[in-house]
Image 1 (cartoon, rainbow, N blue to C red):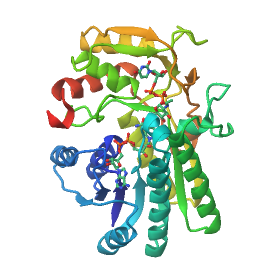
Image 2 (cartoon, rainbow, N blue to C red):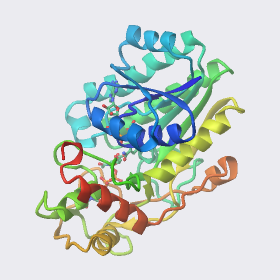
Image 3 (tube, rainbow, N blue to C red):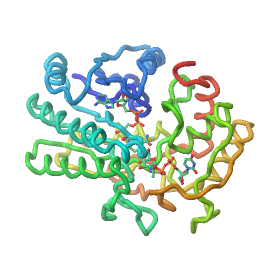
Image 4 (cartoon, helix red, strand yellow):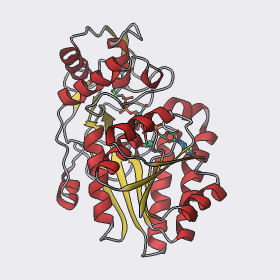
Length: 338
Ligand code: NAD
Ligand code: UD1
């Protein structure tokens, strides 16, 4: 019996694979390495002192995926594979819809043929759009995502809800991540964006390590505690624990379920910068510039539904998240190419 992890070489997927190996699961990873390195999985196996099976390929290749299911006794799927760069999704929408939507449709067809109907999907708080009331609970209506990446997540959620309705044998978790950051405590695996980082924490880490001269803070005039954007940063290890809890729940419950994975606490950009300076002892130069198009002022989760139904809650502080990011970045200044 094995768990299939699509996109298992990526940032979140690699932390998930490590945790599954430690929990004694057999793991099969499918990844085309379009945004990751096989080195991540080599390190995961060395930390876990166990092997996982790695199959290089694209989830949109139906014959390839059929073969993976035929050759392995897969009982459940954690589906991380997808493209996630918001800016690129605006300039290349077809690429994003094809990868994120066609990829999921192909996966579901293959799962159905193989008789595997347990699926955990990586969704995002972006599906709430610009929610007016904080914190955001799962019964807050979904909004209008401001870009094709966000729309692809919302469309896939709707497709998966329809799939679950069509056949009561499906058990599907739609996990809405808030802002995953941090790294495994070993400092051997972490987030390794290609090119200029789009997200705050990897950018701050690259300034701290000297790869970038300064951070641009997008907007200092929001109606927030200090004028900068507020987000619910969640440690990737807490996020992974949420997936394990969701997998266990799906083993006993059918249908499509939605859970927010966040801490319930919002931090501003300046608070993140201060925390990073504190743990790293490095000065983070920054300039406050105009707002970034499509950004919302603030966003944080009501995580009580996951606490009640999954018995899961995030445990790590902003300091922990920044300290673990710094350990990873300082040990691997050029990421997996270091
Ligand atoms: P990532 O880019 O590090 O990992 C995605 C992995 O999927 C990569 O290893 C990539 O090579 C692989 N991949 C992409 N398309 C593929 C395809 N067609 N076939 C096979 N492999 C493919 O991203 P991540 O940060 O680990 O995110 C994982 C998932 O979580 C994504 O679906 C993302 O949209 C979602 N998510 C991420 C965040 C975040 O802030 N990181 C927030 C919300 C949701
Ligand atoms: C972004 C995406 C969102 C996606 C999420 C995770 C946009 C508009 N939204 O969310 O769809 O699900 O990443 O991949 O891109 N910031 C700076 N300077 C920077 C980078 C960010 O000031 O160089 C600020 C942002 O304005 C925001 C906060 O830091 O206030 C967090 O930004 P980011 O890490 O990009 O995450 P989100 O905007 O929440």
